[in-house]
Image (spheres, rainbow, N blue to C red):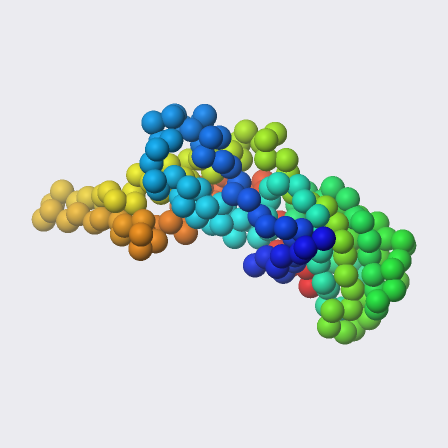
Length: 198
């Protein structure tokens, strides 16, 4: 496997694709956006923002590897809320089959993990099948559409004394990497229980 580090404290096998494709976006929001040159970068930026807000990659389901610092604990949390399998657990370089895990990402190892940096390694599979999550796809598409709409447009107006604010252009990253409070609230079911594997 060719593992790639993520910003959330673990590695994934390969590279992370965007949470939705341009075709999926157009199926949800309409084909008039198919030729918009801002669509692909907006999907990539929205995917990154959503994943950062959730604290893990969310989708698709894929092999992962977490290296865990030990503090004498038996219980650790992997950065996910949809763990689908544990392939291997190694403590102090020795593989063990004495462990239990939960779908939310909790892992309990039979022997305590020694107090040392990089004391254990877990290979596992986590992530949702994005094709089955209509609400997630809708949330991503809504974030993308909002980013496209504001990337060159007005973001704030005031009637008295006339005050108008414009978003920066997409070329300069205008508003592309942040989420609104409403968008963050919609992602609550997908947030990792714990955001780091240490």
